[in-house]
Image 1 (cartoon, rainbow, N blue to C red):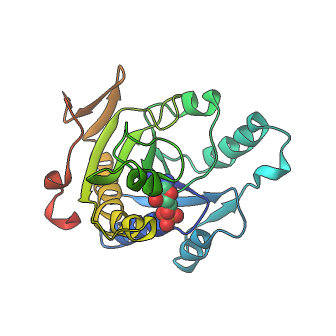
Image 2 (image 1 turned 180 degrees about the vertical axis):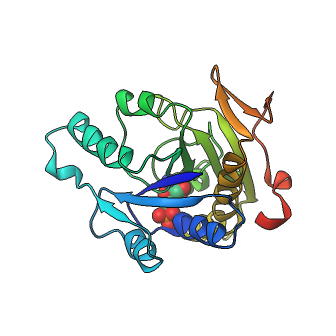
Image 3 (image 1 turned 90 degrees about the vertical axis):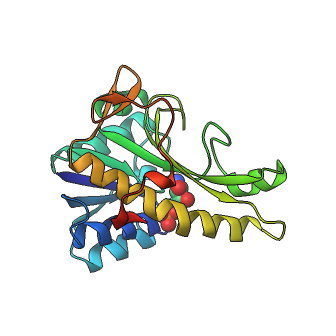
Length: 218
Ligand code: GRF
């Protein structure tokens, strides 16, 4: 199973994926890491483990379509089975999304459909949410709107700041649910079919939850 990971920033999700591949929890390999920013810390993490990295700077292209086609050309050279967005901070065009339909996934730091878009931790606090979390979903043309595969929840504590809440979501949820999802993908257990997620050929009625994590990913 060949995985490509698209990043823009810190790369904690990427690190969790790298670790899970290295310890054979995911029956696959990360064949390339792509960033729109040359200064992404994620690139250092990838390079230090010998993974091929490629920067496609979005500012080099006049528009989204130009950037996306350069990105997909670079991606396709590596023949990925799945493309995982892991803190990739660019909105992708419909053409790009359709090209990788069913093979393109994202992790979003909220309990979708609550809080699509940016600043999710702050918005969860401002809304007085009692729980918050993260979601892995197939990417469709609707921003942060594709069918959800798995979500993980944490309690919002009275003393939480956006930073403390975000950190808990990252450690307790994101770094577990994305590697678990990749492991399922590598085993051929997940599919997007007519707008629904199939797990072992059964349509999910609702997203999987932390209790569905396998031992290796808890
Ligand atoms: C994560 O919270 C991810 O859900 C969101 O962007 C953040 C990226 O963090 N899309 P990192 O680069 O994985 O550390």
